[in-house]
Length: 462
Image 1 (cartoon, rainbow, N blue to C red):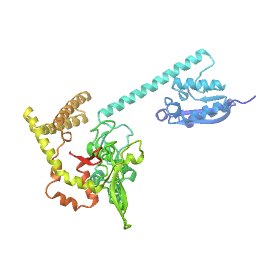
Image 2: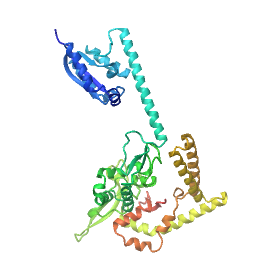
Image 3: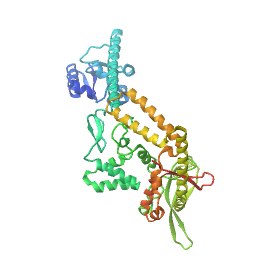
Image 4: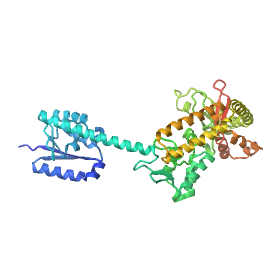
């Protein structure tokens, strides 16, 4: 008689393996003994490790390989230890069963009795699959509830990755005092020179073996945990930078910051395209004079135009020297306008309400910070926290809208930065420090879409 060609399939999920000790080796040994004792010809072994049966079938690579061999008519019988090692998903089971029937392939559990040849047998299989599927779903629901509870209470999830500069204490992320000074130095250096590459090189050279890997340092620029954001919530943990600073890093993106000979583009990431709204990028423009001498000048244009005309139809180019002259000529006038306008708003609001809006904003923000601390310490419920947070945020928004100047942020630091002989001091700086000077004070520079001339700028008020 022709021997029955048999495939041995075993599967174990990580949690089940820990709980029951039913390892792949144990399943394989039992399946092999059963096949040998019944005189079956073992075609191959198929093992899915660390995969739950509720996962989509495309994630069970060995099962897919098994079905491929079934379709090739290489297998007569599939052996599994138990039904829940085979399937816990009714839909996937029936889809698989249809394939098996098309190719005259049967399956059998060696530790349980199931019969697919009778109506009662098929009914029993469906009942057990429903029970197993429901059990998995209930486990998943319980796990999600636990995770949601942990997030509400500011606790980290089990196995969570701990970013450089943090450690786990009392189930929460806190600053790691052994390396926190490196993280602070990292961000301080960046917001002084606004160069990612120079910041990474600086940290690696200064701290040597104490410094994390280059890839870790680069990831720190886009990791929201450093402004206290984790698991979809702000103020989840202690922060190293503000949310505004994180957004500033994000907006700068991967723009080219350095020109030839490592000379930085002073206004890289600040000039906005009037056509598409993207940042202008710098490049080196070469001009050859009749004498044969070649002059190289930094020029800015829209990077989207450079990539594709479909993204931006603008063809605006502007010299760096033109931008610098414009800024130096208009900063003081712009500051005077903003200062007078803000004061007019504050006096008007104070006359109408009896309150100084800027002082009121500061007071409300302090209350909101205190609310965050109470919630993190578990002294107030999530429902109370959400309601009070929304109330305070709305009050802050109303107060800020009355000022109508840089969303209500103070311009005092900007006013102080442009006092005395600031122009003389600025002109004495090298290009790297000129770049840092403007990036620390200017949010964006604008161009008129019709004339293609510089028409204004916004201060980076804090």
